[in-house]
Length: 80
Image 1 (tube, one colour):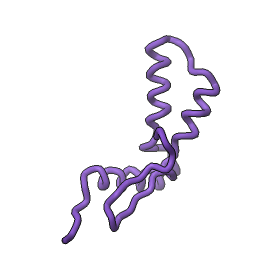
Image 2 (cartoon, one colour; image 1 turned 60 degrees about the vertical axis):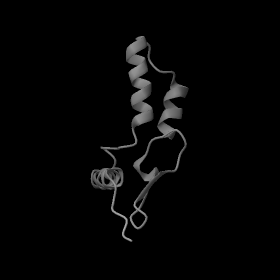
Image 3 (cartoon, one colour; image 1 turned 90 degrees about the vertical axis):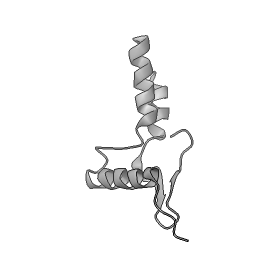
Image 4 (cartoon, one colour; image 1 turned 180 degrees about the vertical axis):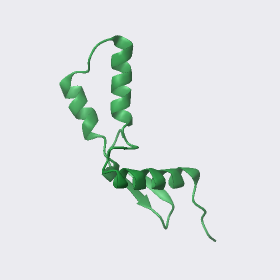
């Protein structure tokens, strides 16, 4: 039985490839920073530097592990 790639695994594979090609200028894992800045815009208050550092620690396309054989995507850092 052959397991077909899911839309999620295809999208993650493509996003990882683009991230690698542009040396991280595009990073599909930027969600934690986006959420923080969205809150800052809503509250009209800049994020605390510690919050920014913590969010940055959860970002990085290198932390996106793709298993082509199993057609799975795994995030190495909790809260990504």
